[in-house]
Length: 404
Ligand SMILES: [Zn+2]
Image (tube, rainbow, N blue to C red):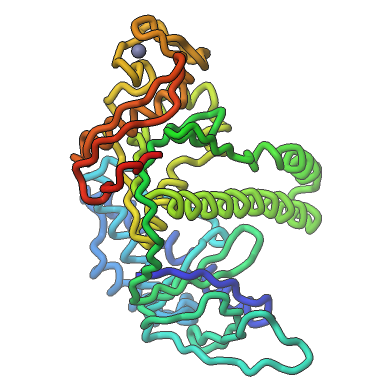
């Protein structure tokens, strides 16, 4: 499976899509209310089959004539998801699905065979960088620039809109995306941190540009202007979009940086070891905004995607393995280490250790050992770690200078 996201052009016809999404939102709210009434009386949610039958009945009434406008499959999909959430209420101990303003309803789904594609011949005057295609959704054509060519059979089409009012389509294709990268014979452990985004076991640091922080002043200003406008006015709506645009920009910048870093790491190393993600409560409370600005979880998803695409491996080691407090050279455990100590000297073997580098080294050591790839040992020269010696048992790391 492969997903590509394309932005639809801001044509006049786009308002029809917005209308359909609004109706999806209204139907969702209607059925949440219905399910909750049912739930209060019988102690369980309505099944999808019952809801679907009820929807068909309602659509025939004069009052709900407009519910026939969106593609019926898209509405049924809304109900399917609702039924799912209501059934998960008890099993997962969640609350009931929340009512949402219909304008905030974000998505609609089509099956691959329910849409049509057509290539639009470029007019000579305004030629674009990418081929212009049009997609037929529920009887209307919408144009988009195909910046990633579709290769496989399209299984599903997701229509989503954001707070600015842009509409995107996500095409899910049936194709395997493989782009093998030449093997480098290198493995690396990584420590995640607040100060440096990643620290490699070879001592290299990858910092994050902290985009939220960069745009914070701009955002504060825009939010202030927004809050001063009269509620319900056009001016306020314009400023709301302005705020949303800054959020979107931050998100885009971060995503772009994540992809680029993930590709860079996949090109450099064959095997990458990480710690199982556990941002303990303390860290999150102290550095809440910074932690969400770094977005470790999102980065890991992207990295794993790139690794499978480029035939590299990403492993995560057990989160209970002590990595920060142990000396990577002799294994001595330093119990007095606090969060503020960036560097320390091991009392047993007298090695000068950098906190993040030491943790990364421990992660690599633990990873290589626990996945049966061999054994590594840091090389110490004049009380400092200068390299790694390796005894590889895996064919993957056959070359002697694998960790050079
Ligand atoms: Zn030591």
